[in-house]
Structures are given as C-alpha cells and as structure tokens.
Image (cartoon, rainbow, N blue to C red):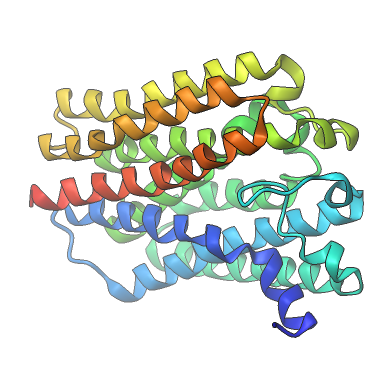
Length: 300
C-alpha cells in the first residue's frame, strides 16, 4: 500500500491516462520524419516532457478543484470518470495535488520558452493557448458546452501533434495539420463519453457541458458525428494527397468505433452497462492514432 503522501502526489496525476501523450507526440514525430527531417532526439525528448507535464498539470489541478468544489464527494466513480478518489480518501493531502499541478505548469512554461528561443517563435501561440487551457479548464472551460467539448481534442490534436511536428521541422506542415485532426475528434469523444456518468453531480457544481445544456441525445449524436469526422479526416487527407494511402491503416479500428457508439446509444442512462464501452473507447483513442503513425512510417 502506498504511503498517503506518495498516493496524494501520484494519484491526481492520473498516471494510467498519461498514455495518450506518447501516442500523440509520437504521431507528430512521425509526420516530421515523413517530410525527410532527421529526428532530433533531444528536442523530441524535451517536447515529450513538456507535453507530459501539461497533461499532469491539468489532471492534478482538475483533481484539486473538483475536491475543493465538493464534486468528488458526490460523484460515483467509474474506472474512466469521476476522478481518482485520492483526495477524498486523504483530504489532508489536497495541497500535494495543487503543488504538483503548479510545478508541472512551471515546467511546461520553462520548456515552452526554451523551445521558442531554440526552435522558433511559431510555437509561442499554441504554447500560450495550451497554458491557458490548463489554467482555466476546470473553473471556466467546463462551464461552456463548446469549449468543454473541443478543448481536450484541440490540446491533444493540433497543439501536441502540430507542435511536435513544428519543433522538429521548423515549420507547420500540411501532413501535421491533417494528422492532428484524428486525435482532435477522438479525444473530444473520449472526454464527451466520460461525462455521461457525471451529469447530475456536474450540474450541482455549476458545470454546463454539452450533456447538461442539450441532453444525452445530442451527446450521442455528437459522438457519432465526431467519429465520422475522425475517419473522414484521414480519408480526405489521402484523397488530397496530404497523407499517403498507407495512412488508411488507421481505419482498421472503425468496427471498434461503431461498437462503442452503439453501446453509448443503448446504455447512455445505464452506467454499469456503459462502462465496458468506455474502456473500448479508451482503446480506440490510443490505437487509432498509433495505427496512423505506423501507416505513415510504412510509406517511408
């Protein structure tokens, strides 16, 4: 059993969910290599640390804010939603989550400034947007249906994929832009689906995400639209000759996506039955960009 201080430090980081970072940073690195750029491993490693720190920061600050607001005390957790339960178990250690979040923000800012100076100021705007997203996510973004829907996808799609591509190549590329659309839609869907179990407690603390403002029916439809947009973006990029035909390897996960959507449509109001499909949605979100990266490598 972990020491309470260690648990309070690691728990809010939501370590199992950090797997998304190497997937999207790896995709950005592959788009850079596909343009004939020699991979700068030190820059790539620093970019990865910055992206990982950004994810740790938003996780820890979100965990801290949810505990302070009382949300964690009224939420019924699932393996994929409702927080980790670390702070309700160790309330005296809540300051650890805040310290971890703020230190991670500081590290993101330091790495971002170094990348701006050494790799080009084109990374400045996405860096500022990323920091703003981290600092405002729980208190402000979750109170806007549009921002709450799109912010996670934008962060893990265009900001991380295109940002990685930029610091490695020195320019924003068409390949990087198109490749970033896949995680944009999939990650947005990931957070959207994970909000279904938390509608009632989220409403009580003032959140106004899509499901609260427009209902679960709109949420299910939006999930389907974003799923089509995710795969459609790859198909369009191949037709437009922005990505090689081997990028279609990512479409192999379409049956999983359809199964997840059908599960969501059937069990939107039955959370115990929905949980297995939430797990499959995590797999979909990790596997599909990974297959896209492999597809781009096959074309080299």
